[in-house]
Length: 423
Image (cartoon, rainbow, N blue to C red; front, side, top):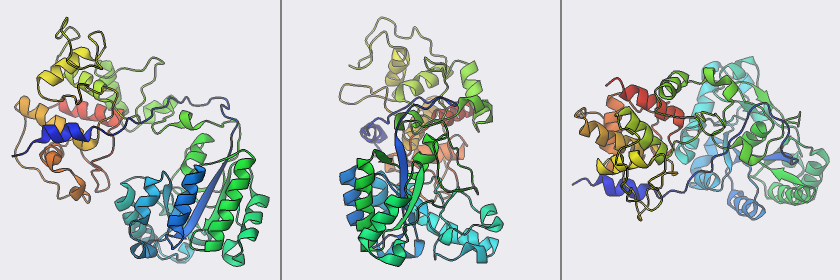
């Protein structure tokens, strides 16, 4: 017998994501000198050693993966992602893309992307074109930003750790992107020595993704980037956050219509600073509040009674909706707490929707996960919920992936609420 309730609650023990509020077009807010160190052509025999050493230094790097090497080093891509590093696409066979047809270019990129998705989920993976070659055809067929470099120590040529270190130091500057190859022992040793010296000079090492965002650059597919100098925007790590979005361009957001619908109807509200935060994960408290309001639950529901959870006071804005969701069996707590600030994963949301639709008499039989390449990653307790949500078109994936363990954003939740309103 299925027991999704117990499994759902257990799955919510994941730690809260750190949410940061960032404003567009702001003055420099960090004095940090930034550098992105990138490692090409791996994984290799020295990659795991490199990961351990980077962890000791609290350095996050970007690894541009050559797909043909992945089967020889099982588990290394997952270790890279688990260490907080960024995975990137260095094509499958390391061919000169400038010499290939459009279809061959797409194949080189997609074959490696499949490995990356299996290791770290469906997301945008920056592309490093081999040899830095990216002509018009390459740029037109790239499904992600193209990342080249501004510091090349020619480690592939010298195979000497001291030379590699010296060349990195002589070329480094604030905002640079450093090229190294983790398939050579001397390259790894030289890069680590250079990191130590640059950290002593006040450099902070970040992924390419964070380097661009912290310098106010919004990377575009098919555009080539070589560095990210400080041109007046130098944000801290907290300011860019995982869910940063330039809200001066909110009308261009893919979920603008749904967000407007939810804001106009009071299902979602802005934060204390008047920001919508569309790309931030939606919290448990915000979601039950939105779903409750959609269902007609008012702010006086259960007034004067305890919520039953140690972390939700009677005066909390979400208290009436927590009472409603808990009483209806839609969502409960664990350990005596509701954990209103915790995010929901996509499969957890699907399970809540399954219960809500069943309670409302709108659940339907059927549905399938066959269309998702990551169907095997959907937890057993969430299969019915994901299947039903997919069948009804309420909660779907992208590019053939459902991403069951990914956090659901406020924009995605707004879209779900709008779709629910039409059932």
